[in-house]
Length: 401
Length: 45
Length: 89
Image (spheres, chains in turn red, cyan, blue):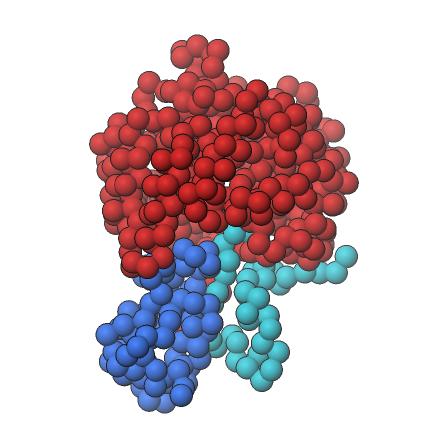
């Protein structure tokens, strides 16, 4: 009988992810300013329908519980519904994230019908929908996501509600400009029978370009933390605000970075990264097109092995908050040019701010990929600027010994 | 600021377990089932 | 009537996955993950739907009579979190 707590098994990595994020395409009808995947244009090398089905079959064999499908805008892939059906027919649940562009009344009705079916029938397909919205008003939302995007999202939510799809997700990336609207978001979710999800803005993808402008102030972080403790029951924080645990009480949940241990990302060209906020060669574990497929990458890649080993806290280990915050988010540190064995840029103790002041302007790593519209295809892949960009984990291990 | 969770693992017990202040509390560690909510974990939708 | 004398079944929204260290159950409705620390408990849970009572599912899974109390408490927890539900029997 094992006496080891589950979270320790998680920290050491499981034989298969519990769930994973799968970006199906870099194509997108929008051009959100903070897009974590720098999406806009399809990549010429995206997985074919057959290759995508083969990935799903592998996930079934590995018994991954579900996939979080995103992109870009996944529903604009012509084979999107075919892939969703294939997943649900093969015991892999699907939760997909969308800006709402294809959630017509007919689509909403069909999703609602399948959701009703799941409740009563064992092992039938499971599909959940998450609508992305970053403002409770068009003014705030469209400033980040583009003109008309608020209307598109609201229409999708109305369609889902009208079709009787209860409990879909309304997902918000928290910014300086929308945090004052958190009560309005809650009211909106309630109005449509949806569940609110709040997620953390990372300086990832195009987010790096708007991070200084959009990330919450320290005061706002504290307010968010207090709000979550007081009113956050029923509010999902799937992307984790575990770095806020340094304030005191931990928020509900594991408060653990699962990257490479319990979750990971598969990108549209089959590359496997530790997490969707870390699309950079330094966090690339392999490709599903390799001989051993996804399973071999998950189980054997050097990157994931190093993430699953014991992590010393480095400069953070002496801090009283470390046990709670575990040094925060590695993607946030990486893309702000901070060392991985030091504080998070939004460290609630203020240690990150002090370290950021020492980062040479322009020296932070840039994302390895850029599929933004307007970027020539030949420049979609960026080579690392410096050798040490490629191995931040090794560097951190050497520093902390 | 007071020291939080032990060095080995952050708090993982679900609210159901946190209610168990009666005599079963001592036996919690022997319980063959452990519950977690994974919503607080990065990457979970 | 105690947990052991009732008939149970896995809730339809639960997915089960065995692990070297036991098993994981994921409930698509509650979004909770339950960790079964013991592989015999996994066998019990998988056998519940067919067994007339939980006691019989336990014995069939190789649980010794002296160990039943621990399995009873485990099943009670799984019932509390809706991982298993009573069935008509």
